[in-house]
Image (cartoon, rainbow, N blue to C red; front, side, top):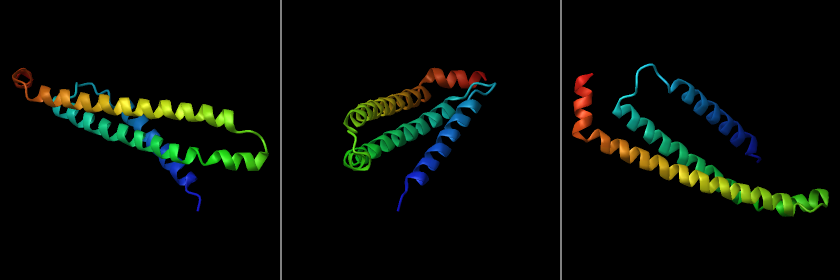
Length: 124
């Protein structure tokens, strides 16, 4: 059973949802610290998902060298190696983004516990 179209469709839907979220994330009023913390948590979830998808692709990637060789008789090696390097870079970037999201969330959590934040909220 081929699940690629299903996965591709789900990723396309997720990408559109993320883009829509980015468009509406610029309200006229600044977000409060609780909202920033919640957005930070969602960024952690999103970047973890990207890391998971790129790791899953890596597992499928290596299986194609033999298949492509059999189908067209050409050498798929150079293109597959290039794709593999790009996928490795994507996995590293997703991992770095996930770490940055965790750091952001931790910093906003710390901000929420500071006395200055409480004073700023009282002034509103």
